[in-house]
Amino acid sequence: MPTQTMAGIGEPLGPVLRFQPYFPARLVRFSDNHSTSSTNYILDPIGGSPQLLADLVKAGHRVIATVSNPVDRLLLQYTLSSPPPEVVRSVMAELSQLRIEGVRLEKHLQAMMSTTCGKCGQQVPVDRYIWNDDTKTLIEKVFNCPCGYGGEFGVDEKDLALADKWARSDGLYRSAILSLFKPIDGVDSNDLVEHLKIYSPRSLHGIDLLVNRIREGFDSDEKNACARLLVLFVADRCSGMWNPAESIYRPKMVQCPPKRIETNIWNALTDAYIALLEPRDKGVVYQYPDLPEGAGLVLYPGSYKKWLATNPKLPIMDVITVLPRPSQAYWILSAIWARWILDTDEKEEYLAILRRKRFDWAWYGEVLGTLMARIIKNCPSNAPLTLFIPDAESDFLLVVAYALARAGFHWFSFTPRSGSELTMVEVNREKTASSHQIGSTKLVKDWLQDILLDSFSTGSEPKTYFLILADVLQVIGTTSPQFLTEYSADQLEKDLQLVLEGPLFEDIANRLSVKTGIWKRKGSESQASLGF
Image (tube, rainbow, N blue to C red; front, side, top):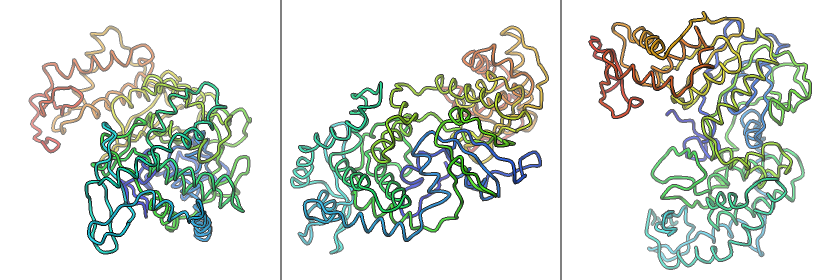
């Protein structure tokens, strides 16, 4: 997968930003049917991709984004209107002056993770510890001593004793954080206890020290937002949800890998500070109902449904959004960070996500279907709808196609983008599908076979199952989307797989699963093999 880096952090995608849907910079290109009028607005009803919104604003457009996730809102502010360097320096200076039992913050945090240099014998900060999460044992440490000695070493008795010391005082800090969530109806405290286990006792204590300083407040809203952003980055970087064996780690569940990293909190804070000092393009972010005279992003702090209840009168001429894939990890962590770090009011609608137990494709399909139905009801019929599906896979394509069909859209087109894991879906309400009628299961299989034969035209390259399904959904979306409201996704995939396993096609990779195979038409003269 292509990577985007956050300067100063040193990890692909960076803390928090690693969970954002991947979206290449400067991807959006407008054709004549897209909004160019200075009086019209582009609507993003999800607002989950800061890069998309930044590109739209830089292209000179007015954009309204409805964003229910408080963490996403802060990241949007950072992406389009990062704090000035003097504000970042001032906030860091004030945090550095914090004293814990008479000791400066840096010294306190470094002492929490310190070890004895094996060469010169002095106490030095540990950059990170490595834990075996299955056995809950500390196994390795990484440090670099000013004397020049350093690297990755096994832990000693003093390291174990220091970890044990912090473990014994952990209950008090953890209970105080859990108490913040008690006013939220329906949240299972046992679930929260499990979620917070991604933080070691030292990490939890160190982050909470910073959070308590934030709650005291700074002398401007700009400084308050900057401080929260710094601590938000630290909260992700110092969680145990980083795998030392993977440079790109985007967990889907709130849980630690078998080997997890415990990161030095002071180092994480200074890395975040350096990142915020990195020069960035400036944009203008307005808080709804304030509106720009020219290009700019208008941010509504809530869902699209909630925004509609304000009876908005903005002229929406385009709808463009990046669809995030279901992510229990990011959505649950966002709610925890929102209440703990961002001090979001317990009545904030997004915090209800903490009550949800499952984040499967069936549930996500219902969510998308409801959103699409609201769009078709409330946006002008001549407003194009463009959806980008990042990290695309076959289940994701099916969920989107069925959501569009059930919402009542009569024409949509799927286009996987070459060289990336991104699929573009274009929806046009002014077009009507050609009403291809399908009858029995046998006819469905014949129809799918015809689609595949056309897809594997003479000389065409072999295709993955994902690309084959995209071709099928492209034909269905432009000829008979109503078919999806009458035929289940499971049956459609079953029929498609039976056709592929039939006499006309072959898997040149000889995989055990149809979905992991590389397929071509039998007898094709093409020698292309996607690297096989």
